[in-house]
Image 1 (cartoon, helix red, strand yellow):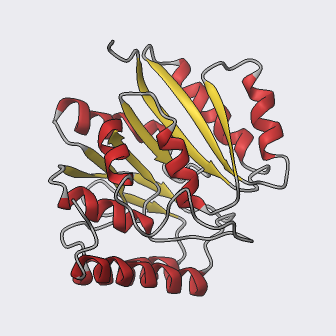
Image 2 (spheres, one colour):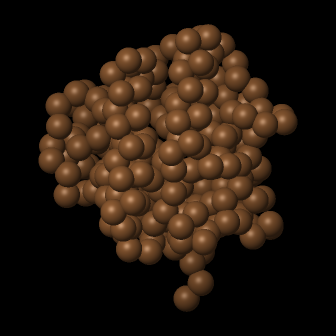
Amino acid sequence: MENKIKISIVIPAYNEQGRIERSLRRIKAFFDERTYEYEVIVSDDGSTDKTLEIVKKFQESWPELKALENSHKGKAPAIISGINNAIGEYVLFTDVDLSVDIGELPKLLYAVEDRGFDVAIASREGKGAKRIDEPTIRHIMGRVFNYLVQLVILHGINDTQCGFKLFRTSAAVDIFKHTLLYSLDDKIITGGKVSAFDVEILYLAKRMGLKIKEVPVVWIYQDESKVHNIKDSYYNAKDVLVVRLNSLLGKYKV
């Protein structure tokens, strides 16, 4: 039977009581103006605040909204959990702060639905892209990191880390079957953790012969970002090197 739901929106969330309501209201307003079927999945990463309470309150009047309760293992496993539960033809995962507004979604949908790409990723680089209110140090660090990514493992993609990516759901599920950095079996952690799992999934997508399209978007820096400039740069660089090592050792069986 053909799936009636066109798109699933996956939002990983960890202690987001201060931002989740605003984001859900914006997403609902966007889809209220569309006619196609959709679902929104908040994949909670073991929050200890009122994040889930707020989501469940929204569910009372929003049947398309779902909540997944996961143990705290980090953003990547939360996204994997959300994608594994998605039933739309396409699946988007987006950061809860909506640094890339949900209004940019039609651009990515056009790439996969009309132009035949398997993956469409928002990019802060390229003609038409805009970065608003981004601190200079963050921009420099992002460009240095992308240089490392292109040099080591993923040539030709100018922005791997923008948190707004759309997949054909069947492709996303297949990709995540082969990831090695993070999985649902990871150990429970303490505190937040940012990673470069995006690099691994895009590397796997290219290795699997999937067509990837970078889509320039407007991106707005959020002061409430949980990214730690030094610590997370280290973890991200480490992840990139591990992906390269895994590749050299032939560990990716695709």
